[in-house]
Image (cartoon, rainbow, N blue to C red):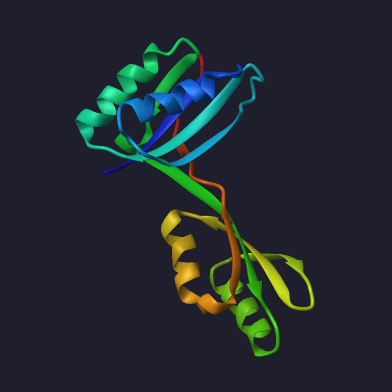
Length: 164
């Protein structure tokens, strides 16, 4: 089962390595990892996407809480949450393909953020399936490069991941 785990961690050298090392030791793959400072510059927020059953996530959570720099852990998959990812796609855009790429970007609510005489770079924001659908919908021969940010997520409503 796809799981999204949010981790509040002290912003210190080596902390990220300890968290990723934990996943490797437990033989869990990290499908996506997004890390950035929070509103408190001493803390970072990690959003980790992995595949695990309930027992696996429970073990991961217990071990994460044992890491000294970890302040708080939340399995976002357990409750209502929002997830987003950003993707930049550089596509060949010459001749008739130029109008088609513009139309596809509009259909998927993407933005063309860079234009040259032969390429467009399109930015899309959304859930994983939306971004994957865009790639599947366009001619694969036109795709020059894809960069995806990885998943970031937040609980819906009043639930927060912060120090009280």
